[in-house]
Amino acid sequence: MKHARIAWSGAIQQAIESDGQLLITQGPHKGRRVEFDDVVWLPPLAPVPKARTVIALGLNYADHAKELAFKAPEEPLAFMKGEAALIGHKAFTQRPADVKYMHYECELAVVIGRTARHVIKSDAYDHVAGYTVANDYAIRDYLENWYRPNLRVKNRDTCTPIGPWLVDAADVPKPMALKLQTTVNSQITQSGSTADMIFDVPTLIEYFSSFMTLNPGDLILTGTPDGIVDCQPGDVIATEIEGVGALINTIVKAQP
Image 1 (cartoon, rainbow, N blue to C red):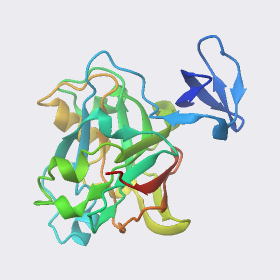
Image 2 (image 1 turned 90 degrees about the vertical axis):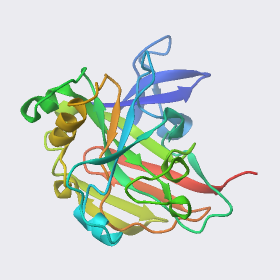
Image 3 (image 1 turned 180 degrees about the horizontal axis):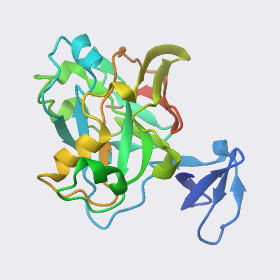
Image 4 (image 1 turned 180 degrees about the vertical axis):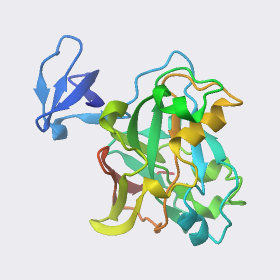
Protein backbone atom coordinates (compact mmCIF):
# COMPACT_ATOMS: atom_id res chain seq x y z
CA MET A 1 0.00 0.00 0.00
CA LYS A 2 1.19 3.53 -0.80
CA HIS A 3 0.66 6.04 2.02
CA ALA A 4 0.81 9.83 1.71
CA ARG A 5 0.54 12.94 3.89
CA ILE A 6 -1.04 15.92 2.18
CA ALA A 7 -2.33 19.39 2.93
CA TRP A 8 -5.90 19.74 1.64
CA SER A 9 -9.04 21.56 2.75
CA GLY A 10 -7.08 23.58 5.30
CA ALA A 11 -5.65 20.61 7.19
CA ILE A 12 -3.07 17.87 7.05
CA GLN A 13 -4.62 14.62 5.82
CA GLN A 14 -3.54 10.99 5.75
CA ALA A 15 -4.23 9.29 2.43
CA ILE A 16 -3.46 6.26 0.31
CA GLU A 17 -3.15 5.83 -3.43
CA SER A 18 -6.33 4.39 -4.93
CA ASP A 19 -6.94 4.01 -8.67
CA GLY A 20 -4.86 7.05 -9.58
CA GLN A 21 -6.33 9.26 -6.87
CA LEU A 22 -5.73 10.02 -3.21
CA LEU A 23 -8.19 8.40 -0.81
CA ILE A 24 -8.33 10.17 2.55
CA THR A 25 -8.23 7.62 5.36
CA GLN A 26 -8.81 9.61 8.57
CA GLY A 27 -10.80 12.47 10.01
CA PRO A 28 -14.00 14.16 8.82
CA HIS A 29 -13.07 13.72 5.15
CA LYS A 30 -12.42 9.97 5.46
CA GLY A 31 -13.41 8.25 2.22
CA ARG A 32 -13.12 11.40 0.11
CA ARG A 33 -11.14 11.10 -3.11
CA VAL A 34 -8.99 13.97 -4.35
CA GLU A 35 -6.77 14.43 -7.38
CA PHE A 36 -2.96 14.43 -7.13
CA ASP A 37 -2.77 17.98 -8.49
CA ASP A 38 -5.28 19.38 -5.99
CA VAL A 39 -3.14 18.90 -2.88
CA VAL A 40 0.15 20.00 -1.36
CA TRP A 41 2.35 16.96 -0.88
CA LEU A 42 4.17 16.65 2.45
CA PRO A 43 6.92 14.25 3.47
CA PRO A 44 5.04 10.93 3.82
CA LEU A 45 6.19 10.33 7.39
CA ALA A 46 3.98 10.17 10.44
CA PRO A 47 4.87 12.62 13.23
CA VAL A 48 7.07 11.09 15.93
CA PRO A 49 6.89 11.84 19.68
CA LYS A 50 10.48 13.05 19.76
CA ALA A 51 13.05 14.29 17.27
CA ARG A 52 13.39 12.08 14.21
CA THR A 53 16.85 10.71 13.49
CA VAL A 54 17.80 11.05 9.83
CA ILE A 55 20.95 9.15 8.85
CA ALA A 56 22.41 9.67 5.38
CA LEU A 57 25.04 7.50 3.69
CA GLY A 58 27.95 8.80 1.69
CA LEU A 59 29.80 6.86 -1.01
CA ASN A 60 27.60 3.78 -0.63
CA TYR A 61 27.84 2.91 -4.35
CA ALA A 62 31.26 2.00 -5.71
CA ASP A 63 30.61 3.73 -9.04
CA HIS A 64 29.74 6.99 -7.24
CA ALA A 65 32.88 6.76 -5.11
CA LYS A 66 34.89 6.26 -8.31
CA GLU A 67 33.08 9.20 -9.94
CA LEU A 68 34.36 11.38 -7.10
CA ALA A 69 37.85 9.83 -7.25
CA PHE A 70 37.55 8.18 -3.83
CA LYS A 71 38.21 4.65 -2.69
CA ALA A 72 35.06 2.83 -1.59
CA PRO A 73 34.69 2.96 2.21
CA GLU A 74 35.41 -0.13 4.31
CA GLU A 75 32.57 0.61 6.74
CA PRO A 76 29.43 2.73 6.35
CA LEU A 77 30.21 6.43 5.98
CA ALA A 78 27.33 8.35 7.50
CA PHE A 79 26.28 11.83 8.55
CA MET A 80 23.19 13.18 10.29
CA LYS A 81 20.49 15.46 8.98
CA GLY A 82 17.87 17.63 10.67
CA GLU A 83 14.19 17.13 9.91
CA ALA A 84 13.89 20.74 8.73
CA ALA A 85 15.73 19.69 5.56
CA LEU A 86 12.78 17.50 4.50
CA ILE A 87 10.19 18.76 2.02
CA GLY A 88 7.51 16.99 0.00
CA HIS A 89 6.76 15.95 -3.57
CA LYS A 90 6.45 18.83 -6.08
CA ALA A 91 8.05 21.25 -3.62
CA PHE A 92 10.86 23.71 -4.32
CA THR A 93 14.54 23.48 -3.38
CA GLN A 94 16.51 26.69 -3.06
CA ARG A 95 19.88 27.08 -4.76
CA PRO A 96 22.04 29.78 -3.16
CA ALA A 97 22.91 32.50 -5.65
CA ASP A 98 26.66 32.27 -5.12
CA VAL A 99 27.21 28.53 -5.65
CA LYS A 100 28.76 26.92 -8.72
CA TYR A 101 27.79 23.25 -8.33
CA MET A 102 24.68 21.79 -6.71
CA HIS A 103 23.65 18.24 -7.55
CA TYR A 104 20.82 15.80 -6.79
CA GLU A 105 21.22 12.33 -5.28
CA CYS A 106 18.47 9.77 -5.89
CA GLU A 107 18.31 7.53 -2.81
CA LEU A 108 16.22 4.73 -1.39
CA ALA A 109 15.08 5.87 2.05
CA VAL A 110 14.36 3.23 4.70
CA VAL A 111 11.73 4.06 7.32
CA ILE A 112 12.19 2.26 10.62
CA GLY A 113 9.03 0.64 12.00
CA ARG A 114 10.18 -0.97 15.27
CA THR A 115 12.71 0.02 17.88
CA ALA A 116 16.05 -1.41 16.76
CA ARG A 117 18.99 -2.03 19.09
CA HIS A 118 21.67 -4.67 18.52
CA VAL A 119 19.76 -6.08 15.55
CA ILE A 120 21.40 -8.84 13.53
CA LYS A 121 21.22 -8.84 9.74
CA SER A 122 18.84 -11.78 9.52
CA ASP A 123 16.27 -9.87 11.59
CA ALA A 124 16.84 -6.44 10.07
CA TYR A 125 13.90 -6.37 7.67
CA ASP A 126 11.54 -7.05 10.60
CA HIS A 127 12.36 -3.52 11.77
CA VAL A 128 11.46 -1.77 8.49
CA ALA A 129 8.07 -0.10 8.15
CA GLY A 130 8.52 0.82 4.51
CA TYR A 131 10.41 2.75 1.86
CA THR A 132 10.25 6.10 0.15
CA VAL A 133 12.31 8.10 -2.34
CA ALA A 134 14.73 10.80 -1.18
CA ASN A 135 16.64 13.38 -3.18
CA ASP A 136 19.63 14.35 -1.05
CA TYR A 137 20.97 17.53 -2.68
CA ALA A 138 24.59 18.50 -2.08
CA ILE A 139 26.33 21.82 -2.64
CA ARG A 140 29.89 21.06 -3.58
CA ASP A 141 31.13 24.62 -3.16
CA TYR A 142 30.96 24.21 0.60
CA LEU A 143 32.58 20.79 0.67
CA GLU A 144 35.81 20.49 2.64
CA ASN A 145 36.09 16.69 2.81
CA TRP A 146 33.91 14.03 1.18
CA TYR A 147 34.33 11.87 4.25
CA ARG A 148 32.97 14.57 6.55
CA PRO A 149 30.48 16.75 4.67
CA ASN A 150 29.78 19.85 6.72
CA LEU A 151 26.33 21.18 7.51
CA ARG A 152 26.22 23.68 4.66
CA VAL A 153 26.75 20.90 2.10
CA LYS A 154 23.92 18.58 3.11
CA ASN A 155 21.86 19.72 6.10
CA ARG A 156 20.04 22.63 4.47
CA ASP A 157 16.41 23.69 4.58
CA THR A 158 14.51 22.52 1.45
CA CYS A 159 17.42 20.37 0.24
CA THR A 160 16.01 16.91 0.98
CA PRO A 161 12.78 16.29 -0.93
CA ILE A 162 11.17 13.01 0.09
CA GLY A 163 8.11 11.07 -1.08
CA PRO A 164 5.64 11.06 -2.61
CA TRP A 165 4.71 7.74 -1.01
CA LEU A 166 5.62 5.66 1.98
CA VAL A 167 5.32 2.17 0.55
CA ASP A 168 4.75 -0.69 3.01
CA ALA A 169 7.76 -2.99 3.35
CA ALA A 170 5.59 -5.97 2.41
CA ASP A 171 4.97 -4.36 -0.98
CA VAL A 172 8.70 -4.07 -1.71
CA PRO A 173 9.79 -7.72 -1.53
CA LYS A 174 13.24 -7.16 -3.08
CA PRO A 175 14.53 -3.78 -1.85
CA MET A 176 18.05 -4.69 -2.91
CA ALA A 177 17.10 -5.12 -6.57
CA LEU A 178 15.33 -1.88 -7.48
CA LYS A 179 16.11 0.30 -10.49
CA LEU A 180 16.88 3.96 -9.80
CA GLN A 181 16.65 6.78 -12.32
CA THR A 182 16.97 10.57 -12.31
CA THR A 183 15.86 12.94 -15.04
CA VAL A 184 16.61 16.64 -15.36
CA ASN A 185 14.01 18.40 -17.50
CA SER A 186 12.89 14.97 -18.75
CA GLN A 187 16.41 13.93 -19.85
CA ILE A 188 17.84 10.82 -18.15
CA THR A 189 21.03 11.74 -16.30
CA GLN A 190 21.36 8.96 -13.72
CA SER A 191 20.48 5.29 -13.64
CA GLY A 192 21.46 2.44 -11.38
CA SER A 193 20.23 -0.29 -9.06
CA THR A 194 20.07 -0.76 -5.32
CA ALA A 195 21.80 -4.08 -6.00
CA ASP A 196 25.00 -2.06 -6.38
CA MET A 197 25.06 -0.71 -2.82
CA ILE A 198 28.30 -1.44 -0.99
CA PHE A 199 26.40 -1.83 2.31
CA ASP A 200 22.89 -3.20 1.86
CA VAL A 201 19.88 -2.36 4.03
CA PRO A 202 20.30 -5.26 6.53
CA THR A 203 23.98 -4.41 6.94
CA LEU A 204 23.17 -0.76 7.62
CA ILE A 205 20.52 -1.59 10.22
CA GLU A 206 22.84 -4.02 11.95
CA TYR A 207 25.69 -1.50 11.90
CA PHE A 208 23.79 1.54 13.18
CA SER A 209 21.79 -0.38 15.79
CA SER A 210 25.03 -1.78 17.22
CA PHE A 211 25.82 1.58 18.81
CA MET A 212 22.62 3.65 18.69
CA THR A 213 18.90 3.08 19.05
CA LEU A 214 16.79 3.42 15.93
CA ASN A 215 13.22 4.41 16.74
CA PRO A 216 10.00 4.08 14.72
CA GLY A 217 9.91 6.82 12.12
CA ASP A 218 13.68 7.22 11.87
CA LEU A 219 15.14 7.38 8.36
CA ILE A 220 18.17 5.89 6.66
CA LEU A 221 19.05 7.43 3.30
CA THR A 222 21.13 4.78 1.57
CA GLY A 223 23.28 6.72 -0.90
CA THR A 224 23.27 7.28 -4.65
CA PRO A 225 24.90 5.75 -7.76
CA ASP A 226 26.99 7.75 -10.21
CA GLY A 227 25.55 10.22 -12.69
CA ILE A 228 25.30 13.48 -10.77
CA VAL A 229 25.02 16.79 -12.65
CA ASP A 230 24.77 20.44 -11.68
CA CYS A 231 21.20 21.75 -11.29
CA GLN A 232 20.15 25.33 -12.05
CA PRO A 233 17.09 27.39 -11.06
CA GLY A 234 14.15 26.31 -13.18
CA ASP A 235 15.36 22.72 -13.56
CA VAL A 236 12.75 20.05 -12.80
CA ILE A 237 14.32 17.00 -11.20
CA ALA A 238 12.54 13.62 -11.06
CA THR A 239 14.11 10.93 -8.90
CA GLU A 240 12.41 7.57 -9.37
CA ILE A 241 12.82 4.17 -7.74
CA GLU A 242 11.13 1.10 -9.12
CA GLY A 243 8.08 0.11 -7.09
CA VAL A 244 8.49 3.01 -4.67
CA GLY A 245 7.63 6.12 -6.63
CA ALA A 246 8.70 9.13 -8.68
CA LEU A 247 9.59 12.23 -6.67
CA ILE A 248 9.42 15.53 -8.56
CA ASN A 249 11.17 18.67 -7.39
CA THR A 250 12.01 22.08 -8.88
CA ILE A 251 15.11 24.18 -8.25
CA VAL A 252 14.57 27.87 -7.49
CA LYS A 253 16.93 30.71 -6.73
CA ALA A 254 17.26 31.31 -3.01
CA GLN A 255 15.78 34.54 -1.76
CA PRO A 256 18.17 36.99 -0.06
